[in-house]
Length: 295
Ligand SMILES: [Zn+2]
Ligand SMILES: [Zn+2]
Image (cartoon, rainbow, N blue to C red; front, side, top):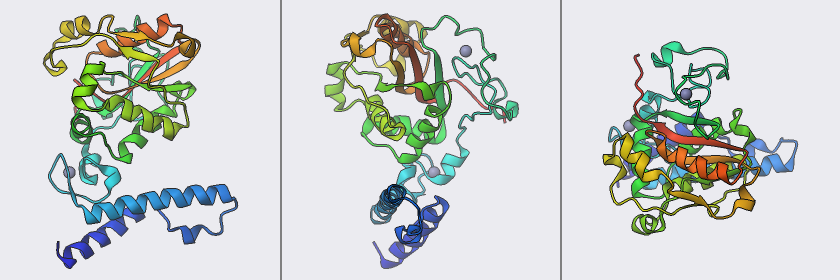
């Protein structure tokens, strides 16, 4: 790696920090509260560390192959993130299942998601609401695929999920859990990508992370990517059980998964959680498959 390359990337990195609103700790000495200063210092140190790592170990964007300037953006570059369709609070969508209205961003409104807006297809589902960060495309698709290979994703994705976690009714959640993998599948992969997302989201939302109460008891031989809707239903029906019902009763569960395809997995998890008398199941995924923007 040439010194010129390092210098160029360091300049890019500082520009990136500036865009992120990062200030060096020395600039915050006038803050009123020590706790705020400590928090700002930790955030700044973390972002500087991330950006320096991006300089020392340049990463390629999983979408366009370009340089990823901020490690928090992984697995995609800033440009690809900006081109990805992220759902917004003002988008016209079904209040319950989060399905965006045809027309995508054309239908964008200036008011929050309205409880009276319903698609009519999800009324009987056991979960309370389902939300996704955006469409299964671009940076979000890259994040889903990357998380199947390695147990890491950048802070930008986690923050995008946390935005939805802070909006009603998801902001009433009392505990966060990931859709569990069967123990055999987890051994094969080495990690559960949904649990990794859920753990980081729980930290961001200052909620307890529960990795043990919901378990998957049915092992699917077939790769889920090749399944149609009926096969997904049959594979997930009765696949989950609650191992600690006393910890679930009355809880409002924020259930995290990587991608929403037919909703069969969320439905099976929600049925098990509701049988254990969970008060609510809020489903939050990285991306929703099968939606396309018309713009
Ligand atoms: Zn890119
Ligand atoms: Zn709906």
